[in-house]
Image 1: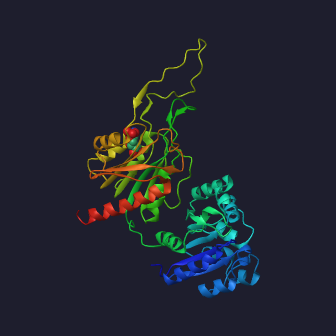
Image 2: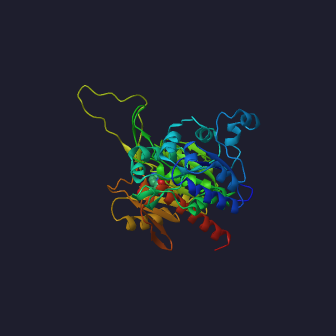
Image 3: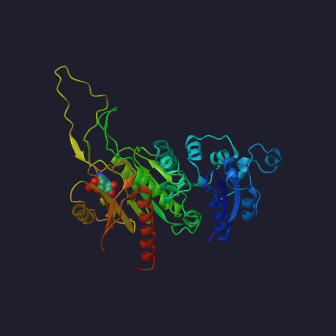
Length: 403
Ligand code: C5P
């Protein structure tokens, strides 16, 4: 499964460090080469000798080891692998990563690497729940770091709750997803994301609360599976994921043009919150207050519906077109109607009515297809993205098989 793959495994300090030994065994069993790295704190929990013995590699520990630096500098070392995995990742190490600190070999390698990075946090439940840790993790996710969340259960410190390192098998599965087979290799997928901005005059615009989180997660999940992703994004709060072709746009009209330009595609996912209307004629200079205090009247016209236009494209309709529906009432009824009206294959519907979903980290969706609908439990936007990407793989494979 992981033959010819190399994983740099950084072990940081914590009781759970002993589980890293089991992970090394599993990685070796799957055919991977493991380059072990330890922080000073980790050495209080497991010995470098056990790690070296299981990995059958020398353990790297010192940033200023001049002999080693002469043979293979820490920068080269950080890039020698296909993946850098931090298991377990302590609260302290996550904080350092989130802030880009580099004061030892392990943190310097994480900052210097150009390979994907995965972290499996493990810590006391209070530390896990602390706003600082939440913030650091959110930041790391935005930076493109893959997170294998901890489990709930009894912990070594005697408390019970979330914070226990994910099982070595679960970490291995996450690594295998990143380094394993790429079922979307050679497939082109277009993803739209974020809000649009419709100008009123040179300094004012109409926009919406879309953060672009869900669209970015989808683009990333598709890229993880090997897809060649064109990511057409309005001005979003979250940065675009690494490894995709980014086409930044502002208005709905620009978004439509960018999507048309990106065709043909094997699939298209329209996660953007496109403004339905724009100001008919944006003013060319800043609109001034008038002496009589009368407010200006904005004349609106409808924007092009990108999803509908691409779903009905005369000659380049992607074989799979997925739309989103953010609803506040009768989510399912509206989503079903929208699927038919817009001519797309699937609608991912969510209830955005006052639940903090728009702009939040989690989503609760219903997947509406021609076959019926599936209600997915509430989960992170990353999980929604992964599930959707897997469904896209299955659908494209079915089409390939002529089904
Ligand atoms: O009609 P409504 O805006 O609810 O439809 C949402 C879906 O349609 C989303 O997938 C959105 O990206 C897409 N859409 C679009 N162009 C528009 C309006 C919505 O592509 N002008």
